[in-house]
Image 1 (tube, rainbow, N blue to C red):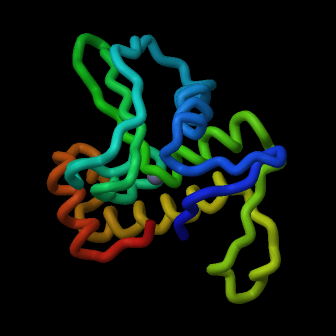
Image 2 (tube, rainbow, N blue to C red; image 1 turned 90 degrees about the horizontal axis):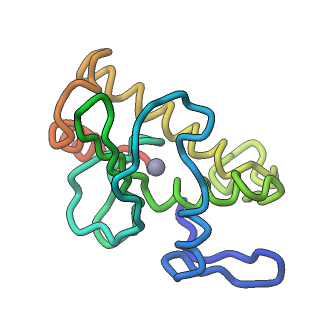
Image 3 (tube, rainbow, N blue to C red; image 1 turned 90 degrees about the vertical axis):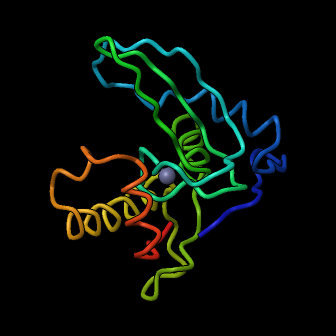
Length: 159
Ligand SMILES: [Zn+2]
């Protein structure tokens, strides 16, 4: 599933536009988490190379799509979280507007059913995580981003 634009409040929001970026950046992906991290940078960029999985759904952040990159300092070390384009859109709209819904074309049983974008992302994450555990074991998150990307691209995982 990939969305290139959508309507909100009578306005067309195009993925990648300044408007869209503003929506995305206004959502806090760490909301509710207790951490002492400090954001050093937080921006939406065009992905150039597939180097990292999405921190939310564990899909590869594909080249030419947008992703949000947050660099933070946590317990003295630098961590970089990357969020794929689809999760960025889900993040913004589910955070700020709980009424934004998307029809689920992939559902064979209930194609007409309205689903929250964040629910769809969650389903993608569940499937991707299963795959990573099967290939790399339960400690997969300790492996390098490059290794994880390799496994996911070989598996042709969903996004
Ligand atoms: Zn994602």
